[in-house]
Image (cartoon, rainbow, N blue to C red; front, top):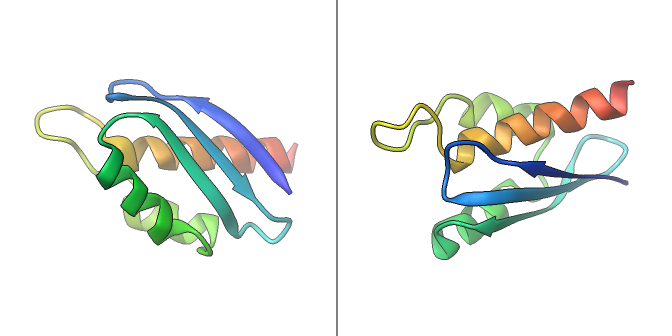
Length: 87
């Protein structure tokens, strides 16, 4: 199992905690702060998915005029998780 806590930038959520297994399958995601209902939905949808598949689907999503969003920040967290595990 691999676990990281990622501090978000430019979103209402402040921290994303991600746990994946050794096969890069997401086991759990928790957002701290932000729109609770929407973020719970994202967490449930990505659980059990491959890290790369989630990055491909959610990368670059924007929130209104902001250059990022909570799904986009989740991609940044997953990319960081991949770097930690590949180091």
